[in-house]
Image 1 (cartoon, rainbow, N blue to C red):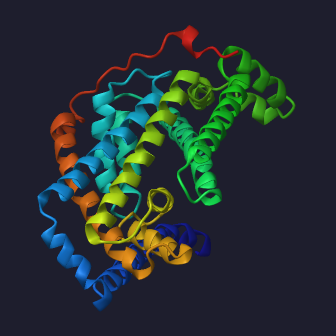
Image 2 (cartoon, rainbow, N blue to C red; image 1 turned 30 degrees about the vertical axis):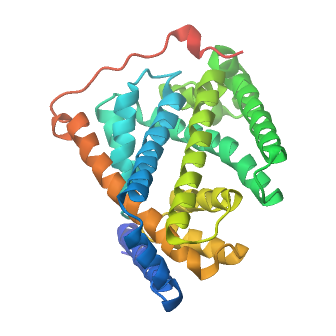
Amino acid sequence: MTDTAAPNARPRLRLAVQLLGFLIGLALLGWCAQLALSPDNRAQLVRLGDAGPWPVLALVALSALSLILNGLAFWAAVFPVHRLRALDVIAVNAMASFLAFLPFKIGLLFRVFIHGQRDGVPLLTIGAWFAAVALVLLVALLPLIAVSLWRPGLDAAWFIAGAAGIAVCAAALVLLSRVFAGERGLTRIHAVADRLPIAGRLTRTPAFGHVHHGFTMTGDARGVAGGIAFRVADALVQSARLWIAADVLGVELTLASAVVLALGYFVVGMLSPFGMLGTREAGAAGIALALGVGGEAFAPTALLVGAVDAVTALAGAAVGAVWLRPDRLLRSRRPVQDAPADAQDGA
């Protein structure tokens, strides 16, 4: 009786945790709104009303560009293995980004469903793809975060150190991946796995072959370089968006501080297991308070960026739905053109 009840309780427990996390996100959003609407910050709302449409349109354009760059980062990662169309991946990213505001990782599940059903990418390859995207993201952003914390100003040393850090991390990722990529890499994996009988059998299954594609992705120098370029461009776009929003509201914010806060805003939203709603805004406001950047006056800036993000994501999701036509997924399945076999062989 107890053994049967325990497994049945786990889905309910996960559901309760996700709902609790979503409510916490709403509470954080309320905390951020309370800071934004404090008497000290009401003058900023007046400035927003007097700013006119152009700054807001600029924020919307930058948010749309961020959606496109994120989609291109996913496209560049999978290209060495599956030649998906860039516009398709951008559309999926737009819809998944909007769904990411909700709990239960709906945005992630949507990516898996679309790329599996529409594009025919095997489930385990999708898992390896997402892992490759995460690794490239770390390679692109961690050096920038470290340099931003080391040097508060965007000077020549900041750019040189950031570029050098990214180059070193990228080279390490590509070279290490190539050790295990392709047929030669698989032979090396078998040599190690054969020491454990179960592992040896697992690494010779078709399922492991799909997972093994991850080394092809992270071992492809052009794909990694493209992914890094899109991620760095996105970081600059998000920083510019935050700086413009702060300028509109009259918050003193340097470009260097905008980079740190924009990266924090992005990373908090990405890591939140309960959806992005409220967590990004509160996270960025909390980082600003901790660093003494803008203090409570930064809360309206975070809310403005979050609101523009939500509206842009909704519009992008609508366009993506028209492009992808999810209603047709159950009636048809698009074939996938894999990369040539020689392109998947690593050194």
